[in-house]
Image (tube, rainbow, N blue to C red; front, side, top):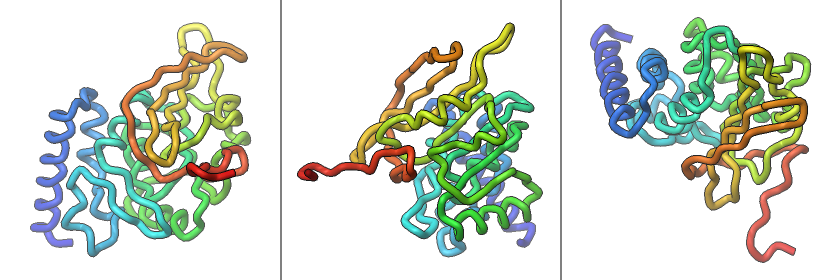
Length: 230
């Protein structure tokens, strides 16, 4: 990439950051993380001219890279602190992983589509980002590395998978419990929810704005039903 290209994309990231502030993303650390990640490298070369528009873009296999506002919104809700252990359900392009890593998180990520997983790992590695990842069913979480300070789901769930709740860290003196940020609803749209573990089997549940994600698929997730299905 030429110096001119680097300047061009840096300027576009700055413009994107300004746009996110105007749309209500209030945490400076999240804005700074978004400003540092080269989103154009996570999208198809044919779409790089649109990489810093605030829109979702196709990445193949019926999946998308979420629009920057959605990434920033979920990240802000997760309230990532340096050193937090974060589980990401849906690696996708790898862009959300990069933003979490810029915030100092220790990232574990699961992707069910092998070619997307391999591509994301390659891009992240080429940029110096390191995640612990695997290809598999994210609805079961990743018990081997639990508990987590935060779990983020980047696909629309019909209901909250029980294994993810069980893998949140239990609150302890001076530190609140783990947080699950997940969009829940139907194929027509989902409501963003933040579920915080407050005890062994107690959880607080907050509901926020509506979004539209590709569906979450897995054994611990009921299949999406359409009107008219028996």
